[in-house]
Length: 424
Image (cartoon, rainbow, N blue to C red; front, top):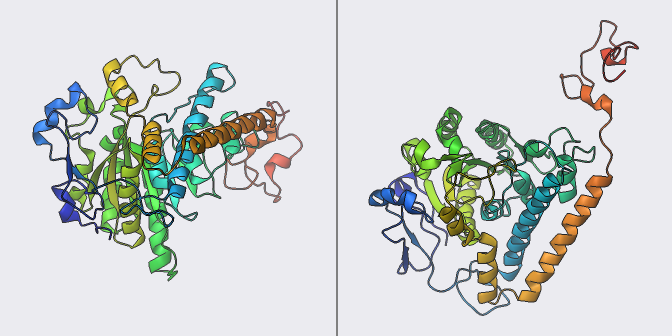
């Protein structure tokens, strides 16, 4: 049975995974800080660490009706879904890097390699009606939410078939159909939007009496955002109104080239949750099964109208801040440490070791994803660019832009409107 959240329960101790047995604690070595994969730079925090994660006795998978092994956390079908989603994210981002360096893609492009367990672990638990907001590192969250690879890649190439008709680009992926409320180029921008979406859900349920409106919002953002005022304002607002939102911190330890420890007086971000009366949870963001267990509790709590949760996922990006970043500031030993904890490799090993999948099963998924990505590239490259007239759209409130004249006609329809401009 799932353990219920309680602000007082989590104020002084980390989140324990759901368990049928609490007799087998997985204690982090004393040389580690509150960050699970810390290197020597983080050791000085160990004296204040109280991190003691617990696990089930036995394996970390869920009982499948077709299996006899008890105490399993995921079924074979769920495990393969997680693997496919993570592989899609990785393959898509690798293709973006290739196209960027081949000068087929322009502008700022921030890749998600290494952080796939966070997106997959949370978003694959959502309903179609649930909302997500995220940062400029947004391609993979959109894929997890169901936006097609061809629509996203077309957007990255500035094509009319993109999910924003080529006007958003890499940092502004949006899909109304999938309730993907956007990537945001400036850190912290998405958090108020997500908080507003959560308020909408509660308003529809409580005021408009739509009893079936149990929609949840996930707000993804990085460690660098957590020193911004919007973060604290929205934590306060969400806790005050018990909004159905989960604040997901993707702590990859670096804000561009600034170490999280150099920029933050109290580095464990999850501890800021209880200050606002909400649970604060830390989880190994390189392990999709641990992320998924925490996500189940946090999303379930929001869906039951029990209020928001702050979840800190310690993860790591395998590439520089963007594809323009030579990535010379991070310690090579630190990068190697996290590369050895690749979340996709870890899940693959778990599925095989627990007889939930064979090598052939996983190779078939790899092949399928390669075909999906290649088809997306072909579609995007063959798609048309937007017409010049599209520049006038979505600028002002009226549908065609630039206002309505005294005669009631759209100004952009006047014969000399574009005279002397690029549209002439």
